[in-house]
Length: 209
Image 1 (cartoon, rainbow, N blue to C red):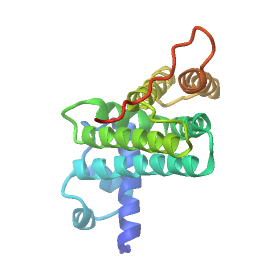
Image 2: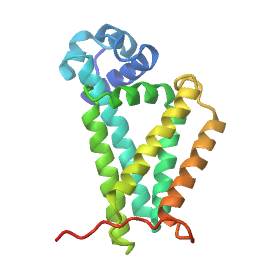
Image 3: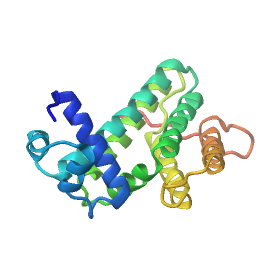
Image 4: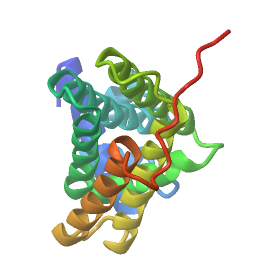
């Protein structure tokens, strides 16, 4: 099959997504991806030297989409809580639509020795910088970055639980997605809007001397 560069990359990554979701990262092979993508070995090696490069490219596509959704939320909403809620929604939507693949790639990215780990940490840092910057621009003060980093980690952890309970991402239920949404919304609202009596004040980042 003769494909243009963009179509060939898309076919390879789509095939890789199906293979990784079906058999996991370690059991997958380039031959599996070729069979699923319907491309020649020569075409594959024009773009990727091995399965690991396809894995990294696939993970980057997914994380780029997540970051883009969160940037749109920040540009659209004028309330820091609503910004975070929209990012929560984007994350859970991915879990609902791409549950099994998200389970496999997310688990791989949590391993410090994985090729995906550095990108995972980069995404966390970009999300935190996005929310801290937006809060400051909207006049909410110098929020402590650790607060947002904790929310990002909590969202990642809650989503992981949903995927595990849904047969490792194969059968993610709407009920579990809704449950996770309610839990994360509660955490986010308490962290960003909770100023009632007895509630610990939201931490602010001290100005550098």
